[in-house]
Length: 150
Image 1 (cartoon, rainbow, N blue to C red):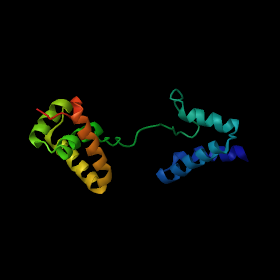
Image 2: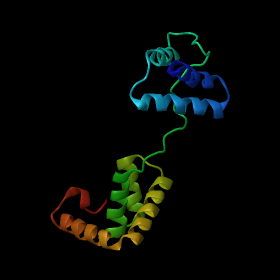
Image 3: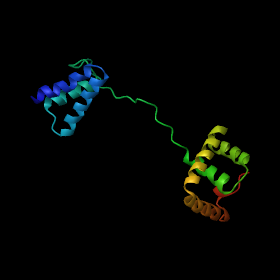
Image 4: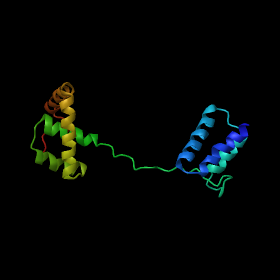
């Protein structure tokens, strides 16, 4: 009986997306049960091995990325923009030019980072008050990252 169920998991992979998704769920369920049979393991190996040209069901399990991963925000740029534009209130064009040299960014990326920081700052004023106090202390301590842009 188990061997029939093991085969049926893979047999569903031959059909359309909805049925195939059910087959993938059934395969995952057998794997999670912790005790797959020898038949199941042999079928799974045949379905994922790139050297096996045709499996018993005629389907192959191929791992692929479905979408491009989302771009992560440039937190270093955001910190730089926040420090110089929001805390020290320096000339935005000067900060933009310095950021373009330092990070190799376009003008739009700079203003997107500035807008993102301003939205976050509006929602967390206490946190940003602490960050401002820390930044001013670092500037007074002659930290090169916190000195005015030129």
